[in-house]
Length: 245
Image (cartoon, rainbow, N blue to C red; front, side, top):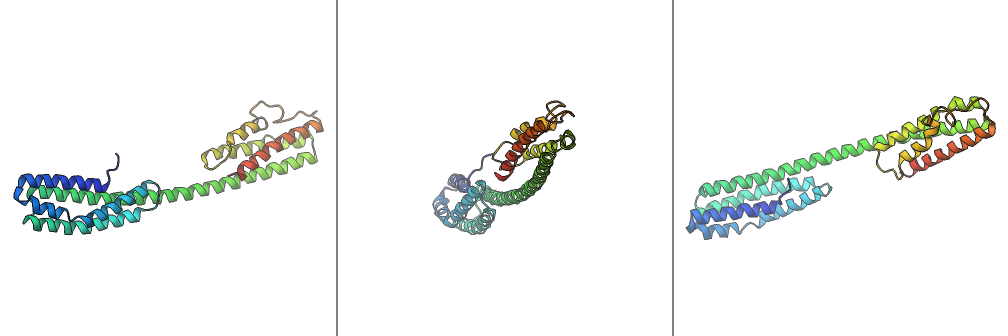
């Protein structure tokens, strides 16, 4: 349901009350109109409330300002209603009852909105802290996977044999691929983690059981060196993904 500005709600309630008094007590219409016009302090509180509500709706931390405006309105409406009673000589009968109820509802709405925005702000702060923790945890995990991958690349380059290579794959690629899958739940990445997951897929075993996931016993050192070079290139891209956050 769309928010109706407090000042607009006030103007509508005042108009209804003024019309009802003019009909029920015509002789009191003029003094009531004069008393109703003394609403500058009421309007000041409502304008402050509307401004705070707009700021809250825009994501600003203004719930306290809205709560203050609600309290100010609660104070000034009492004096305002007292002036109306004096102008009428009584409490205004049914029109007066209705008017008081509408102003009470307006006061309650302002207070409820302030509480709601305060709760939302607290939840947003909690969510932000949780997201930051998740991002830091992911960074630690993927940096660990990248460090293991770098150590594996160095090991294979130092000894490019099928046994050395097959001892490391597909575990290294699957380790990185799992962290890239977790990255999909994070915000702030400048590149698509799935792009690198697809690049890693052959080493992770998503393209069959052969190279580059595993190599046969007769695979040459040159072939193994070329495969590990390609893997290292993909890892460099993942490093840039992490640094580009």
